[in-house]
Image 1 (cartoon, one colour):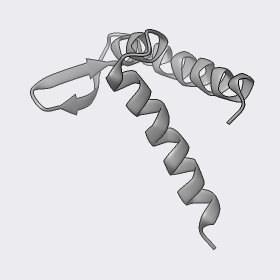
Image 2 (image 1 turned 45 degrees about the horizontal axis):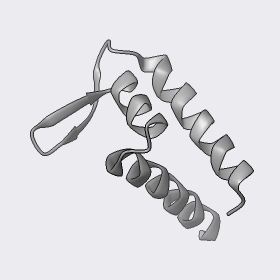
Image 3 (image 1 turned 120 degrees about the horizontal axis):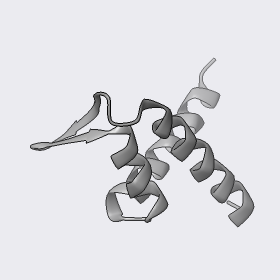
Length: 68
């Protein structure tokens, strides 16, 4: 994947998660609860969790495109 495409995807994901802010929990992973802002921070900082979120979005997109 081209770097520009990857950067654009990350920007879109961050913007989407920022819309949710800290008002409610969006994701539960283990004993940790993430808000929209926390997920956006993880993606921006390219943590292991943030990278996994981006990769999962790519995999989901591919799976949806492959469906009939």
